Length: 321
Ligand code: PEP
Ligand code: MG
Figure 1 (cartoon, rainbow, N blue to C red):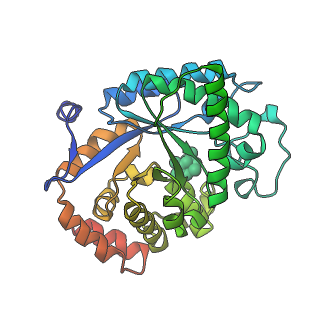
Figure 2: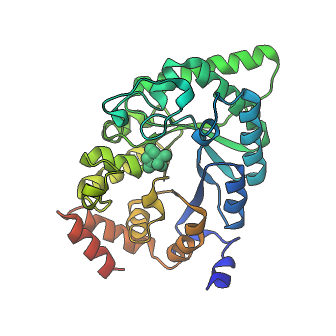
């Protein structure tokens, strides 16, 4: 079976009736990019750069970051590589930053909120990203966006970094895409407004489920309530995809749900353009998509969006493939 799957490495992720989607890989470091490539990834849908900052005693230098980003871009060649700017805070702490303890770290000082405050840290990362951009197909993604001001604030800093590089005569790719994660309900609700400001969306279901349902994604005691089939979550996902498409931008997903075989048919039917997942899930997902009809899954997704409970939806999908 493994051998059979490996034959799909170079093939496209195409449904029975010709709908083409992209299957990308989620990675945490350049070695993972090799694995992604070997497993037939059509791109990197999420590079979690926080691992560069963790398990050490100081911030990584611009040069160190540049080398890591360049390595991933070179491994992937012309394929798209979505690199997410720093997403620390919440469960990911950096002891050397001496951040004060918070009562609600998941609702606190984290990710883009830190970057817009500590612009020194953010600028160093953006400089490294821009310098690396000439080695491949870079796309920059901001995490934990909750409103339009954050996008504009981050883009303002990006512009400053570009001007700095220009004045120093340092080259960067002229036209890379800039997108955002949709993982906070407020962003999903106003996705139509945010779509005008960016080149793509990537839905982060890990956090989107947590914040939509008020269920801590790490809390075992309530894990039965953490359910991607929750109708509120599925409706938000559909809203985000439709809003992106109305504005003419592509919509991907890099949360765990993107690689969940129980939900891939529904996501395909909703029109998701890109699915980013762990390396081991890529070929099974491609095989699954190659066996599905997009038109039929569209109908399935429409049905699902009218249903009232997660249990009902999960059963219905399993029985109607
Ligand atoms: C997500 O929230 O779905 C996501 C992909 O980001 P992370 O798991 O790193 O929070
Ligand atoms: Mg997240």
